Image (cartoon, rainbow, N blue to C red):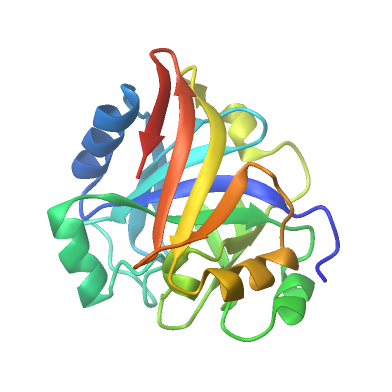
Length: 214
């Protein structure tokens, strides 16, 4: 069992380009996400607003001006994922923050990746990334992250008036997924059900009412 606190940190929407990802979020939530920064190790860049309560939303895409120094995270180098992103950007992963990533990964076991240090400007953190860039349970199981001591990064992100309300996860192996999640995070806003494929839906309260992001 992972030692608390292990709490929801952020939601990640992947796209082949930032413009496509920003447009996807605008259609779903009615807001335009402001710029974040670049990740030199991964050859990616992002846009970021906060969702209240220490949670934020990320749109991430390959940076055409940068060459990755390893396989990119969130499946961005996987041919099947890229085919799906050619159809539409999508919510591909949710991220849970833990106080000690190395210990958390040891408790979770194999399959969740290894601790990788990533930077964005002056900010540096540890995040779980399998060597092939894949996501456990095709993204239905969370990525784990350890931030440095101090204020959470979301406190410095733009507030667009959006608030996280819930996360609905469907997966063909829902029972196995639920058992794995029981040792990671306990949050009644997150539900798991059986579905024909892995799918994540986020409910977000916006200035225009409750919206769904997929």
